[in-house]
Amino acid sequence: MAEEEILTQDEKDTLLKGVGDSSEEGYAAGDGRIVPYDFKHPAHKLKDHLPLLEVANHRFAERMTSEISTLLRQTVRVELSSFSMLKYEEYTHSLGIGGSINRVKLAPLPGASLMYLDAELIYTLVDRFFGGGGSKPEISENRPLTNTERRMVEHVINSAFKSLAEAWSTLFDIQPQFVREEIGPEVTSPANPAEVMVTSKFRIVFPKGEGEFHIAIPYSSIEPVKPMLKALLDQPDRDDAEWSRRFTDMFLEAPLELRGTISETAITLGKLLEFEEGSFIPLGQNQQATFYVENIPLFRAMVGASNGMISAKIL
Image 1 (tube, rainbow, N blue to C red):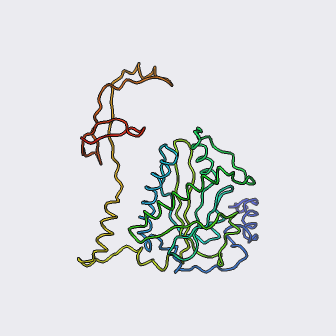
Image 2: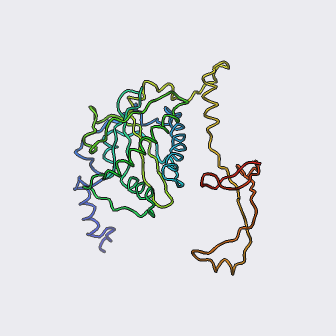
Image 3: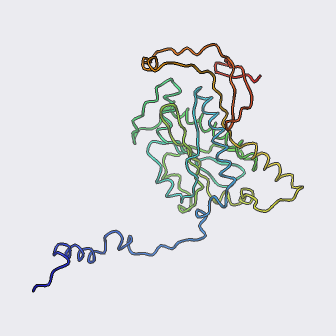
């Protein structure tokens, strides 16, 4: 009686091919060199080492929200999307085409940092500034920025300088300075391409469209002031006025969402189904609203207008 085969001939050929071909993914890595793993690399413990810098990033996002909203005269939201450490080469290779790379100095920190606006952000800023509808731009690799776009980049960089100085003020004073606009990532390379960059990436969200804004600071620039950026784990002395001041400033910077219902009205399902673009909704004559934080009523206010914006005066 013939012995029953467990594997077919095709299955045997497939297995033999996998064993014989050492170039398949999972069997060999690159050219076979062993890459050492640096356990002391600062990227492994970024948030453990620089927690206060992450707090400063959130503070920067809040101030930048106000700056860009004022510049465009419309609601804009800036939020921290990522906070990481990357080698310089990794970071610059990740940048998209058509963006604006700017070399800046954050005095008194040594070395030069980068501020980057991606192409979609630049085009959307210009579009919204001139009253556009926020249509998605067509990004061309070869098209240089126009004078109008460069002017808009300058406005955003100046707003970032102001916001960054205010966000870092509870840590220490910095004076951001513009150095120059870079043509591309290849000309910004530092002496050591393996330089580690502390990279903060922010999303700037518009009613329609969004873009990215980055701040990349060399880790070697932050090292001299790293003790000031570390969170204190031990209980400080009671007479440590500087620690108390910083803690109080950070506590008062805790973000809260203030919510108030300006008006409410009751309608039927039939009326709701009749609504279309251009329909008016009668809201009544109520001009007072109760404002809440975390669903806790705090105060009542009179709703009206001030400087062309809907405002509320606390009663």
